[in-house]
Length: 267
Image 1 (cartoon, rainbow, N blue to C red):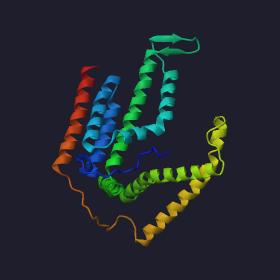
Image 2: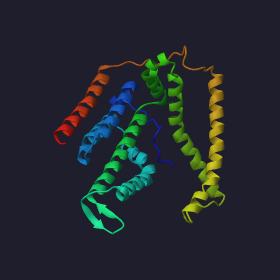
Image 3: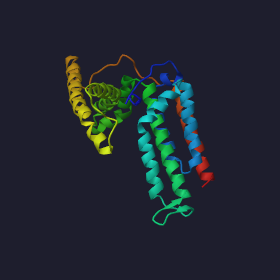
């Protein structure tokens, strides 16, 4: 639980930290498009190179990315086995009668696993280099054109940011509850899978109670500060595009262009 980094912010003075949040959100969307454009496994080298470049420029330690992947390791294994079992193919490597292991199934399993890893790592990069307040402002500004259709841009941005911000808070709270229950003699490690799931109830119930209490405290704190939505609100830091933002967007578009050219050449 302590390994979850999604929603955490690591303060820094790097080029990536200084980018406008709207730029980083846009680059993240381009990165997602880049990842889904990949049709062959070796083309993942392009989004991987893009991610490594972002890591180097942001000066974020690789251990943060490793920690962001650790909680989903069981999901990665499950997705790998699922694709391995249910994906067909023509190149049979192992025939057991009731099931055939094919080369196409192995490639598809690696394909899906790498895609999930890249997406989670990219999302972690965004939250690690962007403060919750900046992320809220960036999302709201990008959604501002939708206000013509009476879309609640500010409220949606605030909800998304609060949800991200509370992920590490709830993880810390669950760890405290777990340690407290273990001090009272609770056992979360032994037994079969059903017993271990049942043993999580003493953690989940206090965690839900704590979550509602924190939500109520947050609502009270916002009301006491006369918060009433985004209308008429001012900001201490105004968002401004710079040459660095333009350069970052051009680099992202260049990576996508290279990927599209390679996809066309190597169909």
